[in-house]
Amino acid sequence: MSYLPSILLAAAGLLALILVLIRTFGVLRRFRKASSMVTASVTDRTGLLKARTAGLRVALEQRRRPAPEQVELVTSKEGGH
Image 1 (cartoon, rainbow, N blue to C red):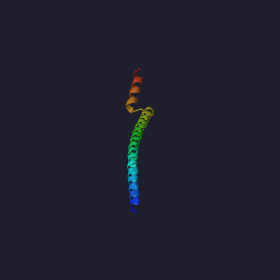
Image 2: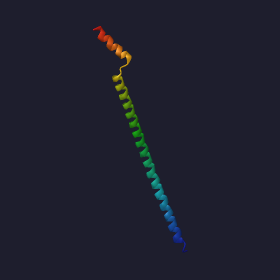
Image 3: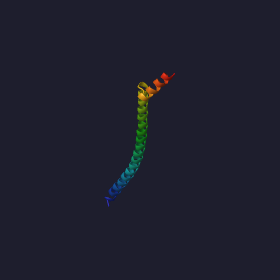
């Protein structure tokens, strides 16, 4: 019966290892969920920032070089006065 304490100790160690692994996987699952939420939020905000930047570029380009229709409207109004 001298092997009984060794078996009990090995079983206790195995049980402790299983409990630690279960907790670790739970923490990793929560971390992965939070990480994906942060990634989605940053991606959304980055997309909105890119869209705003593109809109500003278009607006600035329109102010620098007006479209031919706008030039005709301005010249016809000035000529009619």
